[in-house]
Length: 277
Ligand code: DGL
Image (cartoon, rainbow, N blue to C red; front, top):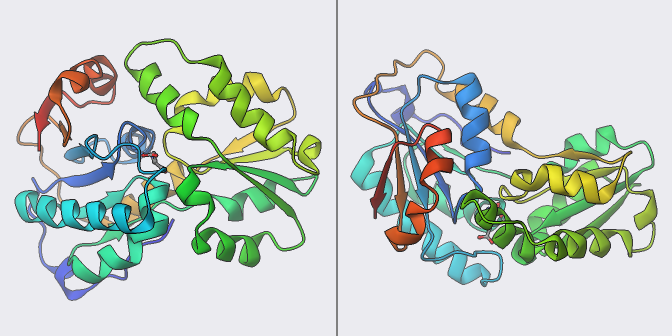
């Protein structure tokens, strides 16, 4: 997780109704929202999902950067959020720097929790599950060099878990083959049998924590960035007033019909209204 430096714009009094804008390609950012509710239940939230662009993980860097920068530009213009959280590892590892350069609002990104994983591992073998786009980023290489030097960081792209997490939140069954592919993709690598810590480097994946834990078996711990991100948002908004003027909203760039199947899961995260963007 990284954040912008506070600039003069953040020193201005903040409108108590100004939302925190959480952005993801789909439902993954709800794992961040859940952690945010724990530390900042009073914060008005707009949850924005670029479902027209889902999945990001199979797209090129240029495609992801263009979508994220374009959409966040239009969204901040429309809603004037007090803070934007890119609750998506793929979008953050590709476009965080660019978005910070163009938007005058504090931005919290989501980056793979390699640093805490390196502190947790006893065997020195860490698995990392992310999207195809995330695991190839130089950003991940830099985190590995900085925090996991001397350890084994085994990476595996698990695009099937994104679809499985979306299905689960629509109330559909989770495809066990998707879980097995992700686990086997790590276990089959050299040193894979010694993995004791797995970084869930996609915000969708903690939604499948129970299924992943069962498939990995005992002795493997999981780590993601949600709590750290939530604490960072709370820190950056410390001292600000919060006042909800209506129900928190989930906004989708794709068809609303598919989004309606998510209504119970969204309501469970305090998102009572669903809108199109
Ligand atoms: N939730 C996103 C992430 O954290 C990616 C899912 C996708 O669109 O592929 O990487």
